[in-house]
Image (tube, rainbow, N blue to C red; front, side, top):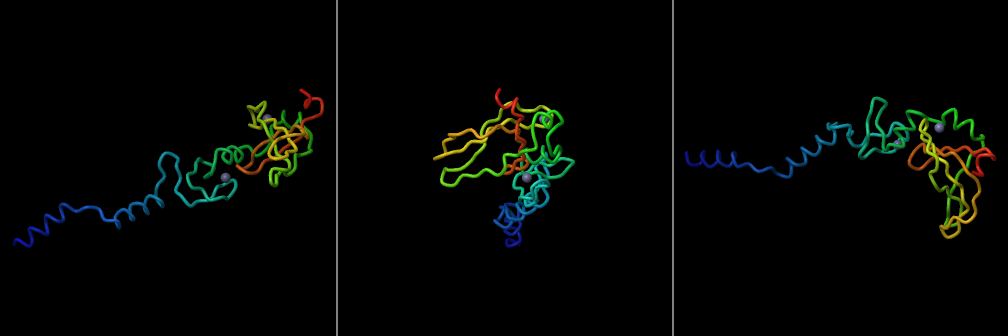
Length: 156
Ligand SMILES: [Zn+2]
Ligand SMILES: [Zn+2]
């Protein structure tokens, strides 16, 4: 009888083992969907990168607000289209601090969220020569679409 009593009290004082924590964590990872925080290990609906802490809405799961907005309105609005030309800033990259980069975020558009950014030629990470002004809209955290401002507007 003593033996049974000991067993019973042990069960009552049961402390969670590492296995219990692991099970809880696993069920959290695969089942949780609390307050718009999506389960881990899903892919972004817009850019397909793996979502760690994502935002989900009726359109899907997104890795960032940039992706969430771009998926909802993938492009420039009519007035931004009208104030720009089809010429894009192309790809910008720097190698050892030398190359092209876009800077700034002027005149954010309330309709499509694009901003005016200037493409610069950089040396040692310092923007030296302005190469043109563009309306830029970020498609993913690392990729953007752009349209060059019409010459009359780019001087302002
Ligand atoms: Zn994304
Ligand atoms: Zn716009």
